[in-house]
Length: 274
Image (cartoon, rainbow, N blue to C red; front, side, top):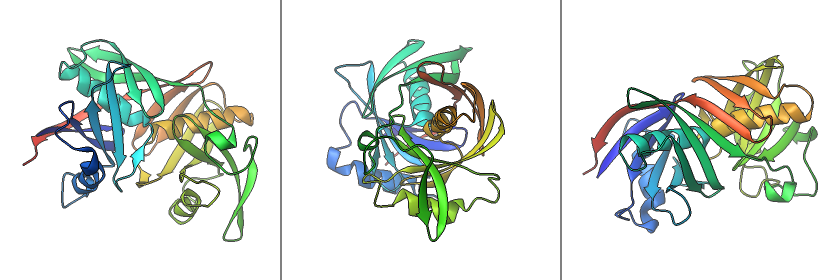
């Protein structure tokens, strides 16, 4: 079975064409754990499976390194789009992709038949607690959450998957590895949550680090970058068009109407599983 190793800003994935259903449903989770284990296997933040779709050009399923299935992934869907185009699966500059978060549209930037960047229509964000999901009613905007005696001001939303956004004075001083897993697994988030730490440089320029559920901190999180900009919009801290700087690189986020994310994507290598 062939695979591609790919990444978007260092957020890396193993991508496999599973349209023939060679990988059975009951094996998806264990295979993700096996292939994503660093040093002992290929190593990645997640496994992406390509499937047939009755409602879109193709279907994307994504599994975190702990085996849990994610609804959506911004960097992952960019990798997936490049994979589909360069393997002649969907030879179009605009793709419609079925995900657990609904249908997503991507637009490819191509140079010499190689996809260099992908723009993703992330849709309309969700703010209602019961749809994120989060316990309680209404919206969570600048609410207090106490962790080990320290109060954090959180804004929560879903951009296909759930995010808890925290604005900090300094990312370097933020207790990401201490607080991230505690918020991820906090009982008010029944499906766990991604935790987004944001430092505002300018209203149009942010630094972001993300503790991803099922993965830990990653070099980049596309949906987390979108969530950071949207949360900033809500509380008046950011403009609608923002450059987001992540440890692995930069993403352009446009939240004027729908939320659009644009960033680079790369193939690292390809191989075969035995």
